[in-house]
Structure formats: C-alpha cells, structure tokens
Length: 204
Image (spheres, rainbow, N blue to C red):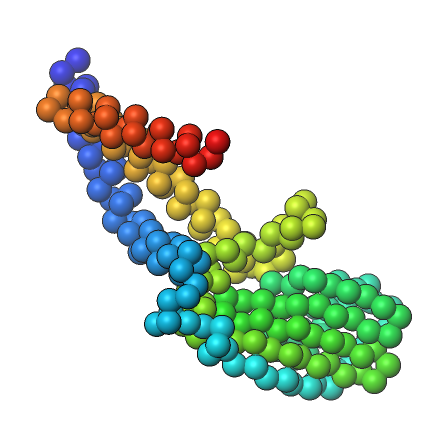
C-alpha cells in the first residue's frame, strides 16, 4: 500500500511539472490576450487605431457550372489567399465573403460579370494578432453545426481543446498534492471554499 501510494505521488508530481512546462507559453498567450480583451483602452497595446487599410483588385477567371463553395475555392487559389472563410453572401451577379487569419481580415467582392475581385483588407499589429488568437476558432455563430473550413483553424481549435484538457490535469494533480499534504490541508480547504463561493457569486 505504501509503495503504491508513493508511486501515485511520484507520477502525480511528474505529470504536474511536465504538463505545466508544456502549457507554459500557451497559458502566457491566453493570459496576455485575455488582459488585452478586458483592458482595450491600454495605450501601449493599441491596435485598432494602428490598423492598416488597403484595397486590392484582381482579375479572376470565373469557371462555369461550379457551386458557390467550389467557386470560392477557385477564386482563393487564383488570388493566392488562404484563411477561414465566413460571411458568404450570394447574388445573381456577385459573391461576397470574408477570409480571416489572426491579425488579417479580407472582405472580398467578386463581380461575376466583369471577372474581377476586390479585396478590402484590414491588417493589425502584433498586439492585434495576439488579441485575435484568443477568440479565433472558426465557429459560425449563426450556424453552430458548421465547423472550421481552414486547416490551421482546425489545428488551433484542437490545440485549445488540448490546453483546456491540460489545465484540468493540472488542477487535478494540484488537488491530489494538496490532499496528501497534512500541513496545508486546512488552509487549502479555506482557499477552495473561498474560490467556489466567488465563482457561484459571479455566475449566479
């Protein structure tokens, strides 16, 4: 029993240390981006006033007989644009859609008759990219059943799932360490109850 208990302590310590080291930079990233979201008036991290606006016009070849999704893919290949596609609007003579990557957003208007593509672009600085990463998941708020359509968005989404799982592991390993520590058991109870009470107060 003693060896088994010692083994649990040993592996719990290893899991806690190496999971924390692996998640260190991800935790920093989401901590900093979370602060930027909560304190948008911080001048040193300003990004909206420093955004770069530009308009680009491309000539595109419009193949006949393609559906909207295939046509958008063809246009993106011709213009060498990649990213998460959203806000698609169709009409008889045009297609409008948005292509986003962290820190760079393009709103494209395709004139099907003229064979032209107008791209209105917004590019943010480094702070804007960090802020964008916090909420960049490719989820369509009007169609929740549709997942990301860009491979890097999907990878980033899986990464966020892995980070959330890792944080749960860190919490569990912390609880195990606290539970085994006789000296800090009572202070731990006080901190745990205080934290739970604060969460219930905020979310009630």
